[in-house]
Length: 336
Image (tube, one colour):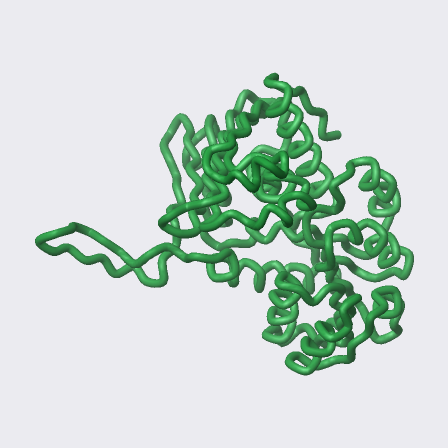
């Protein structure tokens, strides 16, 4: 059997902990070093999952006993760390977005294109088995020609306004996952029309952002895609997809802990609450994402694994949605 892929983890915050746990659970991966500017976070991570800690991400990237790098640090650091990893010849799994500024993304585009090691973007929802099966069946022609895709994504609770101010906004921070999901069905998007809404959160409005949005994308083949986002949902983490075509409909509903339903004198066919947190809903997706990345490091990059160009395209769509929402117009896009 191949030796485990040796990982450097850059950033040990919430999403870094998700990746650390996935690496630890994988028989094909091992955490060699964790890096965080707040070194205590890195020290706590290696105490739980093994490896050594450092405050210097570049030391971790260039370490001789590191094969692959996971970039889970704050967004403004992504581009520089990605460039350093490519320069060091290391495989990279980078959390979204690559950056909030498309010019900074484009500055490393040629380097990413010519890299001899894989660059994978952390669009974990592509690996969700429910969504992946729906996509497989659409691509197999089960609904005929795809005419409309409806994506619903609502978070249980809004983030603090302090986070919103540095997040890039609802389109670049939240909906960017949905833009990538849309492109996994319809790669060539040609126009974006978005409405940003301020419905319930004064803090988000004061930060200059929207707490809800409805976005319509149009594909080069005339396909329509509707994305509904909200920063709150009283009934839990709302994640659904519906694919409609000439021959029928496929849909994925929300996931509950079990499929047990109850019917009584006061209610019929009631189930357990939806998952409350993205880590609960997408834990399996993160593990499958890591498995696909490990396979790519070993030379087996599967079709559909999101790469640098997918990250760039999702950011272009997010930028177009922001412009559309602010200016009240449809924005033509060229993702080439």
